Image 1 (cartoon, rainbow, N blue to C red):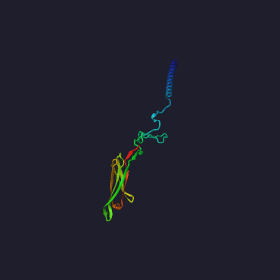
Image 2 (image 1 turned 90 degrees about the vertical axis):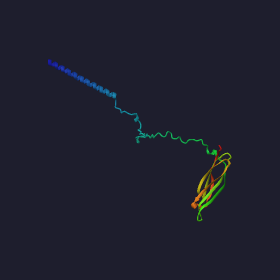
Image 3 (image 1 turned 45 degrees about the horizontal axis):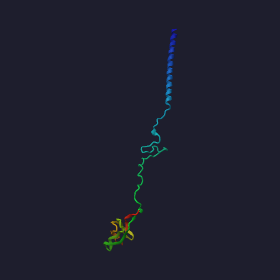
Image 4 (image 1 turned 135 degrees about the vertical axis):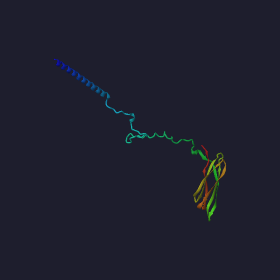
Length: 201
């Protein structure tokens, strides 16, 4: 009877241990299942800065094959220079040349040196009298002098002088010609190059 009682006690003890182990296993499985449900599927952590095409430091798309490729450039120059600036200058038709006259055209030539019968150094003096016919306006008058041989211009220059109202002045210049051109027939011409204007608008 004693042996049977000991056997029954041992069996009860083993059964209790097995039951405790089974309950522990069931609790662990339940906790694992609960954790999996709370966590949900794995998601990649995204960086909001990664949206859209990648740009390098210069503002150009790092992936030239991307269909959303853009070129940002350097931002421009702040709108540029704004185009041409409007001025307050009056239109040309508001200005009119003053009255003047050119008279007493004179041309003198002198050979300074000969080689045999040929002149190799010649001076040509050209002059013209310019008269400002305006009674109120003074200004700079420019006269263009040219020396020519067979309609070929050998040399030219502009002479400028200031003329007061109703003043006349002789404009004069001397050209020096050397070499084979000095032995040619040389003519002198003088024309107005710039004349003062008056405001008429």
